[in-house]
Amino acid sequence: MFIEVTGLNRMETDMIRLRHLTPSLLAQELQHYRNLKGHIPRVIITHLSALYEEELRQEIADAGKLLEMELELGYEGLTIDL
Image 1 (tube, rainbow, N blue to C red):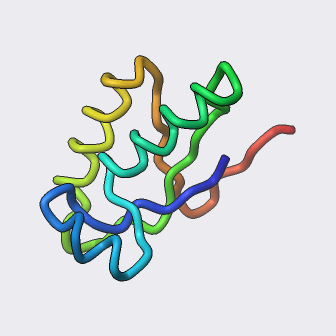
Image 2 (spheres, one colour):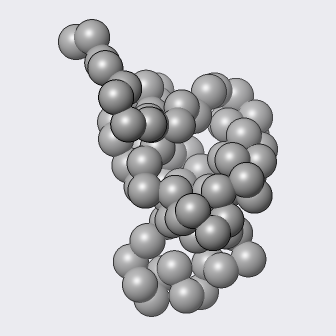
């Protein structure tokens, strides 16, 4: 699954209005998916805001720990084997 995470958790209200995700919103959505499907697929996160990239990386890592899975960060040149 490729998905964007643009804003920090503290920006949740604005991100909802702008229709973007924060790490905590992503974790909520993925937990909902797990509840419905019984698993969470591989997740690759894109569209990190350059202004907050370091903080986003930490918040994404924290969300992954909460979900007990690795949330991967996409990058230019990433290749995926299907």
